Image (cartoon, helix red, strand yellow):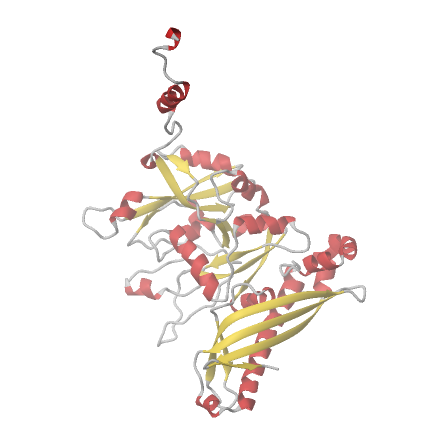
Length: 439
């Protein structure tokens, strides 16, 4: 018994030892991190990748812009080339006094030049980097660095891009939001090709820029220039010659078209990991009808069949679609059924008179409009892109796996362009809590 006197209980001894070794040994203070919001990937020199990193200035963002004594530089875009993405990032690290931190990246922007050559080798780095979330969004642009240097609504381009993905793509009905995980999965799955949101310039001057007296000019490729992101600075961007110019707008009142750049959204179509084409405006919506992706909240406009020159606006409440492959010949056919629920945003007086025939005419106009948009998009994607972004092949693979095995190697180039598509649209229109079907 005496030999045990003066000894600490084993449990208490373990607790005391644990206190001595507790703590975050590998922790890094926030001030020692260069926090990256967006990453741009592009190609300027053959065989190399140009990496653009948006480095935020937390002090300026926390203090707020416009206050006395606070610098209006909220961030910088730093660019370096390398044979690989990690090598290019290390080249940037040589010029940054803090450790580059990718844990807060929200968007990856891929420039058109790199996207046309193939993106898989470069996205593979982010898929394997344990700090990068697979839920981050991926988008293409005419110039990855140029997008990060254009005028932006939020304090930082990454915040603007995230807002465009979360809000505009959900409610405009003209684009999609695609995560890194979804893109990589579609590259690996049979019978379906990946897409991304596409951001592009349009040749019209932004109203707010004009009010400020500034001009956003087309200039030499911004990929060769790095810039601070200042609250009162408009930085030149660039448009490649073959960049799509989406939905050009006219100056309100005068109809004047002014030169400049601003951001607009569409859809970029890929085959495997290579960019093959763009859809914008109603062409993009044609894809969304077929796949029932993110059309809710958009507006459909049709003419009033009883009053010439009067346009009726309908708000899309919900969209459902089904793809059914039919194999009764050498080339499969596809049956696409779309079901819509819409709400009248402006109700013509005629409808209060309970004119059933008028309602049926409006619904027929909606059905034809949707069919027309789908037909045009299908024609473009099948004949020009030759890339099955709709997933027709995937539905065929699931229903007829043996038939798909024989078609898989020549699907995009030979079979998909010849697939006949039967379109059916069934709409419901809600008016004052009443539901009127198109059938």
